[in-house]
Length: 288
Image (cartoon, rainbow, N blue to C red):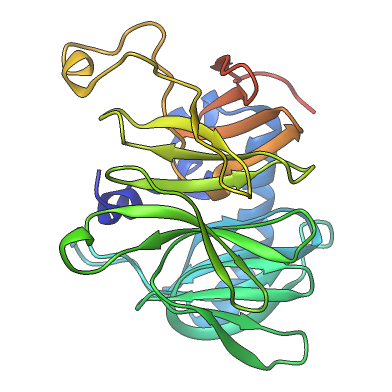
């Protein structure tokens, strides 16, 4: 899977909820969050950006959540990755604030009181609380995920030249230092880090089937967690019973605790993964 295809495969809670069938299959807590976002954010977005503007992505949760806004829906399916304006959203109060109204970003993430903004050319910039913006890193492909301490970001890193089709997992601290922590053949992407900061999980196609792997911020040897022994050839004959689907994006991931990751697998389906044992199962119920 190429990085472009990874981008185009991204589907968020907001978009999943536009399908009645998907909404029926969602965990009630997720359905409520989507509904709340649409009820509170959409009117504010249309007032600020015009009636054609659309809410596309939600990044993070709570008082520091962010949202990506598309200027208008494309007239036809072009396959192009949309460029977004970024707003802040307080889930508790429903208040919205404009972070950057220019439609020029791939994604964004809150990092403490600051906001990381990824531009279309792969430049990662940090918008500080005082409004100053500085360049953090270049050749960043996306999949931003802040560390629990808010002192760094996990991200997918891109390459140039003959390796332009490959990506790796890196960690970018707020001084701009970039450290690569996972680099297998093909695409490594969608990193996430546990609340205790000890475990990094990511999705890799190094075995020809998108699977979860586990490593650390120090770059320990990756351990495959899901879809062991499977290959693309086997999947072409139909998904086996033990197949664990990959997430649609890393900002559709939430940690239940230090060992349990919950994620959106697309089509309204949610899964839970134990990052110690690799055990995974659908999570479609519950009303918390």
